[in-house]
Amino acid sequence: MRSFVCAVMLLASAVAEAQSIRPEALRGYMRFLASDLLEGRGTATRGHQVAAEYVASQFEALGLKPGASNSYFQTIPFVRTSVDATQSTLRIGETPFRDEVDFIAHGEALRDVGDADAPVVFAGYGVTAPERNYDDYKGIDAHGKIVAFLTGGPSSFPSEERAHYGSSLTKMNNAADHGAIGMMIVRTPYTERMSAWPRSVRQSRLGSMYWIESDGTTPHATRPEINAQMTLNRSAAEALFGGAAAMNETIAAVEKGEPRSRDLSQRAAMHIVTAHTRVESPNVVAILEGSDPTLRNEYVVYSAHLDHLGISDPVDGDAINNGALDNASGVAAILEIARAFTEAPKKPKRSLIFLATTGEEKGLRGADYFANNPTVSLQSIVADINVDEILMQAKTRDVVLIGAEHSTLADAAIGVARRTNIFISPDPYPDEAVFVRSDQYPFVKRGVPAVFVLAGYHAVDPTVDAQKLQMFWIQNLYHTPKDDMRQPIDFAEGAMVADFAWRLGDAVANATARPRWKKGDFFGNTFGR
Image (tube, rainbow, N blue to C red):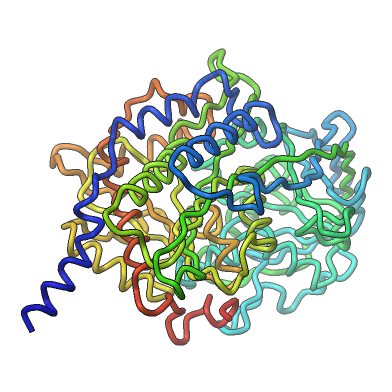
């Protein structure tokens, strides 16, 4: 019995004996990746390509093998869309509205000119969930019409199911399935607080991207039935509902779970002019081969997006969105995790894929491309551990694991927490829907159990309110040029989060059984294989 216990302890401590994640290394990687020289690492820009070459060189120096055939680069063909705001128009009834003031036109991937001139129906959150006996389209006919709906999803849903149904792609598919020809997105008060209109306009000017299917022409994740999409500012939304009082009452009722889907007795005309450009941008993929003759043919993926917003309209004179925390921090983390694995006394049994994605800020495009075009067999990928936007405002005693509870990854995480005296906290911002807003989600949709590792919010120093600091960052620095290396950053916090992700991946890579979806889990039932 004693020898068995000793063997287990030796196996469990293989990672613990290796050199831990180094805060100074995170700082060094981030200093380069968030440098002005890389101009914000926008997808398909020179700055992003330089960043990709840098990450690939780091993987090569660590002895990792190229993960895309004989290359570290999985090059993705994209179509980039750019809206002509001077030519795009909206009319509700007889009243014209102004692009970027009253509405934001979404670039059309499938057409140069998108028109939807039709009656408008309101469909609550735009959600249909048969398993919860919920349908915002009940009692209305959206065929041939423009459908308007709120951002977010029903508060009665578990947060990550709400995130799934609240995602823009799920809502677009649902609208198209119900026969709609256009979409109007109405911002809730929560969305207005968390994403100020000027920031939304600034980001919309950067355009969208869609990866191209294998036929060489079809943009992925599009529906030709939807001719035009717009997000409305409060001025246009109030006109749509017939005044501020009617709109506020409708939103308040829907947020309380009271159905308000109805014909709005309004007709709207949306006209969107879009320019299209073909571009390419790479994911960076590297592999550390496992040590077990059989299990080395299975893979644990570590993902982190390398891209950011690039150059935008200036904020306080600065136009470069450096993306220090979002997401030079995550890329620095997986570089350090890769180093830690290569220096561990024993290599993991399963192989590891280190994936630095492109196009995350364009809608998880790089991760989605990889999940649909994996460089290894999809069936051989057992899990994805995603690291994105490590909030390093203060040293905390906890981590947040988005999505872990849906699979046995939760069990592995609990084991790591016990060994490290780090506790696991629930998602403090469920309305942010981060489960569908980072690169783990495309893996989930392909049936792969996944977890998104985030910093916690219980500060080691009891005088520090870490959650307040995080919320300030989300509301004021997120997706702005102020997310650079001049902001206060606690690299020890980043090292703690990366260390947890490292140990979690080690546990999964060395486990006898691969992770599996929990019985009856929504995502396992919906996407599991």
